[in-house]
Image 1 (cartoon, helix red, strand yellow):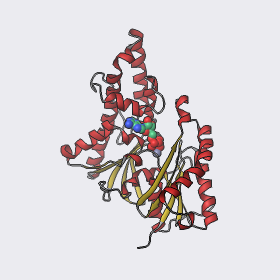
Image 2: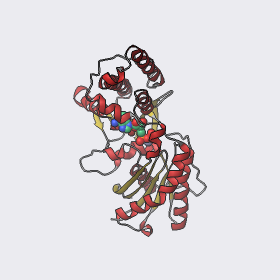
Image 3: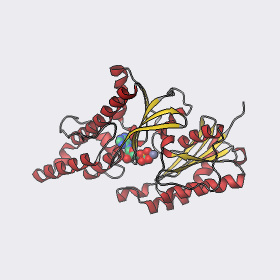
Length: 338
Ligand code: KG4
Ligand code: ZN
């Protein structure tokens, strides 16, 4: 059968990524991480765009080589239009446009948040694909949303954060504890050895399916300040318990809202996506609902949870099949509706 080859480019935040897909199969998925941000405690937009500009050509080159195809075999180029950091998006967007123009092939603009959700449709042995309609919980450093997904192109946001994203809740509390950026993985690691009920943090009261995480961060900050006043070694001596208790609170917040979403929609298929879905506690809590409530849950392969171009490529493929192309006047957007 006729194979379509899509080159996908993702540059919305601090990772430069390029992937080649043959239809729904990933032939290569290269990610250049930017370690420069670690010492600053967060992503520095100006440094991110500069690193994207340095990395983009070699990353695309490696993706093509690893996929063992040449540029003239490409059917289309997909790129992240938004949401994300403007300077970062512009690098990937401009590169994609120029190459599509040079090769005279279609250009496909992709929504980063749709890509986190549709990553579940990448062909991978041992990974099931959800059926429509399903619920998606997208949790990343920039977003926290519960979405009803009715088709490849029909998304309905049921709830989202009113302030910080869940990844920010992880990263900001991790910073309070002295971890470097991004701190989410550190909390995850220490939480595995701690008692989740050692300390109690109150869950925010938010209407319906919306979320709020900024209050939790403040609550933890005051708690740590008070405890370290009493004992300067409080963090060092109780790191695992503190991390486990923070993670437990965040998991409860997410799982409680998912339960409401399932009751509200009657949909019991839940797919998670975004960098925070790498969290082992969240994965475990989600898996437990299969026996407990009869849900069917979908957790993407690790390399497709954090930002990557393969997920942009799968959306690119489905858009290609419907001829949803962009013309060369398409612009990057820091904010963009799902
Ligand atoms: O999707 P992503 O790579 O980038 C954004 O689009 O934001 O998500 C990055 C976020 C960071 O906040 C990072 O701390 C968090 O994902 N993260 C984790 C874990 N791994 C990554 N948070 C908790 N536990 C983890 N294991
Ligand atoms: Zn992301």
